[in-house]
Image 1 (cartoon, protein in one colour):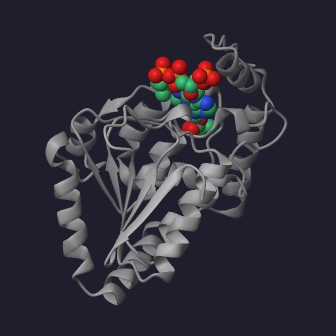
Image 2 (cartoon, rainbow, N blue to C red; image 1 turned 180 degrees about the vertical axis):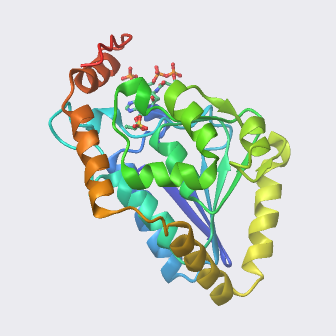
Length: 259
Ligand code: LCV
């Protein structure tokens, strides 16, 4: 398990993102580490998991590892992309996952956090939905993750501006559960985890799956799905997508032309 630390105390598991050199970018290796840790905790009968970055992190996660994105001609967020595996694993694992946030959360890491069951952040935390910043066509289930966490108008603002929003604003609009002073964040999160761990795990596990199935029950016709998928191809085959990825790698501002 590269780039993460795993600990368990009784029925409470903790997974720490620990690749500060790459700002905990969600690389294939780091994602595999989180998925492996969740599976180990499930087998070790953990009843709740805290997912966090290293203490005092300035960046919780910089999002998808841009270096691992294709430069065009291929769906950058297809079914088998590591980020998609991570979101599905968090959503389907039996234990509630509490995202404890310090620092900035970017791009696919925002979806990862919102796929968690409960989100508790310190006042300095921020959340930025970044596909428009890179020219990326976000994928359908990912957009549904955002739509389950905030109103359509808020999702549009986050997606179209790609600008970070504060933890306070995220809490005010109901996108996250709590904002807690940095010095109390760990104790508050552990307190909630302990309460959950002392409740009935079967009841909680079934309610988590019920809520996942019911929240995901959105009627999209096959034709509607094909249309959305087809539109995404227009984006990832575009000059702008290639330009967004190249500009990031060349550390310069992208010049989008709408082609
Ligand atoms: C690889 C990185 C990254 C990174 N990947 O430090 O949602 S979608 O559709 O957009 C999806 C595809 C997705 O999640 O895309 C990624 C979205 N993420 C972002 O847009 C955030 C990109 N990162 C930044 O804006 C900055 O790094 C922040 C503001 C997070 C931190 O800025 P700071 O000045 O503190 P640097 O930018 O200097 O980054 C330190 C090193 O980490 C690399 C970056 O290239 C640099 O590498 P070098 O030391 O080799 O120069 N890095 C940062 N983010 N997502 N690598």
